[in-house]
Image (spheres, rainbow, N blue to C red):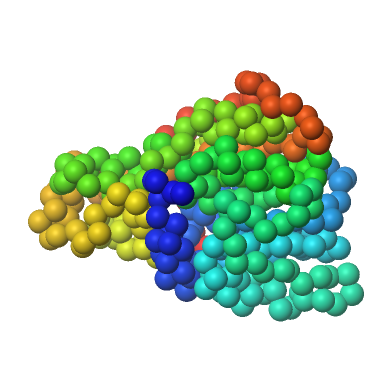
Length: 299
């Protein structure tokens, strides 16, 4: 049972954001593109079944089907309206069954309870979804279960520097939590190792985007579904006085006429072990890229 997040609120937020998400998710698209580049590690291997978990509007699923037209591609998301946006936004209809192309299967399901058979997936691709899952070891155990031996896991998530300015601004206004906690790169790597994954390699980027004011940032967060889904959140609207206090505190961060919002992104790549392989302690590589600012390319 969730104690940090309210899964129903996560589902509601992304369902409401389904129509606005694609246009607002510049950072998510950028991270997705970088994660897709890691598919080159498969070299000449041709996967039979691919899972795009937390697929959103389905761009990665469409890209992987284009790369491997014979593969079965599964797009899975907790928010059904997001899956319904996938077909028109990704041009899936144009690539439906014809010759070598297979349609993309869409499944409305929770990342914490994958409705897939053991050892049925060759590639599990999960872009910026796991920050909504508090029990990483349990999630990775589920990923290990559905992956075939030597299957590839590619995931990304947000790290603890994410929205640090927003967190501090609201902390100056009241005692209620407004920004989610995020696992560190060490916690992420430890959870992978604990689940038994082989040769995990972790990396990180730090993106900083600028906004005219606090309302502009909050509008973008709502547009991508990244609203407050903490179980301990305040269940009433943030009052004008508290919001004004947070906006005033945020103003201290203004640089070059803009309010910065930091996003720390953690990437991980690992391989599923053979059946019965023991769980190991330690043994993962971390490549840290402490870049202060990486511009986000907007479509």
